[in-house]
Length: 385
Image (cartoon, rainbow, N blue to C red; front, side, top):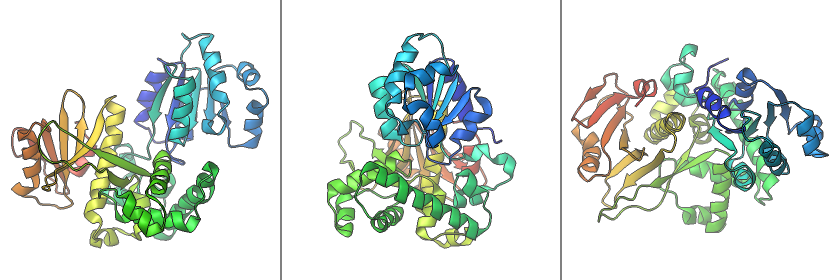
């Protein structure tokens, strides 16, 4: 059992709230995490025998089993949430009674906002972080190539890794999407995902994608909302400082897991990744996902942006902690020069950020100004900012 950094937050929230929701993509380790260190009866609502326990009389079932209870795939039974609220309100002081696991963000958040607001703490569990798998002796390049899903990471042979990725995507395309009444062929959604992979790290343009697929701008937005809700893609919003520069207003799009990205791009080995023209944008997206995931576990309330002016000045990632804003530039190279931190310096001079880091693949960490440092990517992921 690999210790997950999210365990600390889950424990803290279970001591503060009557219920805790662990959100995350399928097969990222939610069930393993919950079963490993949380006590209580476990139910998987995607298993017919378990769902039958609740579906006839939810209130009776919740009263029948002594808390704590672990309820997996909770989004499949919407009627559960108002009953949970009533049960929790009988004794608001008793914490850690229910742990809900879910793999669809918008559906669960909607039910929670309607029924369980103020009664539940929420944790997002991602695939493995690099800092969590150091004991496995997997180097950063291989982790970057294969992605963080536990079952994908352990498949060292290319053929098995590709087979796992294909089955994961087919499950999403052929099982998850049809549940929401989306009338789109598997071939078309696969084409869209490949197109998004090629746009990885670029500005999202729904109109261009719609024209390529023969659908409307709004349809593309709906598809993207669905992918974002299933933790497949991330939209990074632009930062709007109070300055007079013309700022890009479109979001940037990323495939969240680097393994899924590489599979969609046809990259299956460290050599093919090294030779790929998408290597730089892949490194950028990989580091952004790792840093955002770490920040969400360590500093509640942080917000995440990129910054780009129409003149071309860009900061790849801004972490806004309210009290300070930290900028990051990601360089997929082992050597860098003064021009590589020029945008960070401009951002500091204009008050956009307070300090910055250039993250590269070289081995040395060193400061270049009082506010800007150059850091090795692996060392950054193993340290606290």
